[in-house]
Image (tube, rainbow, N blue to C red; front, side, top):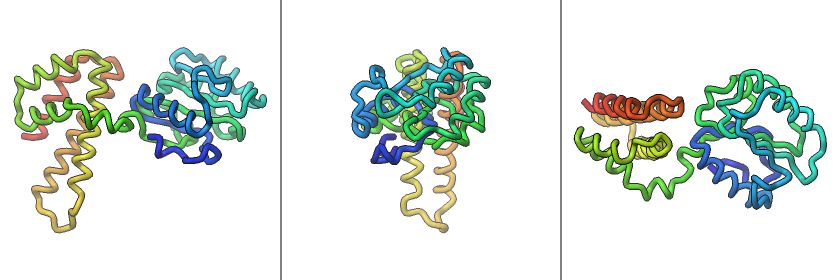
Length: 248
């Protein structure tokens, strides 16, 4: 994700919407603001305000709006909203005018696992970055979870899939993290399928690519359901069944 943010702090846009795993996104923001702004600790800096969106009411948003015009004690005023999908409609509406006219010293970053849960009027004022889910490529490549999972899926090995689910996918957050890796793996296979392709490629290549797109869709749906607190076992079982159907 970091390479998608400007290389110079002075070029940073004033409002960003970062979609992906919020934990991973925050790790990258810590590195980014340290490298580009010299902020060593986001949580302790007088320049930074971090808010858990589920705890913010419209009155607190209005207080932020009133205070934004006051010059910062330091160099900047940086507001980071974690799990921005939990902001109420009233809170989002209260921010609209401020997001349209952000002072030069202020920055807003909304971290969310689902950008579509925010109002379109908020989204339209943001630069969108797909982060978090695909940011930690090194960790993803080192993980054997994804290789195992797709080996069992491709072999339609239901017994091994059940064991895999019982071992790795019982905990909600762990399951979400594994699905992040699965999404990344599918995207990488899609990219590879386009290398060297041309308009004369055969029908088998097109079917292969279409199957990977459908597998990606099922992983995304499952992760969305997990983040919406749908029962973990039911969610994972449904995803696996749907993926097996794709391959039939």
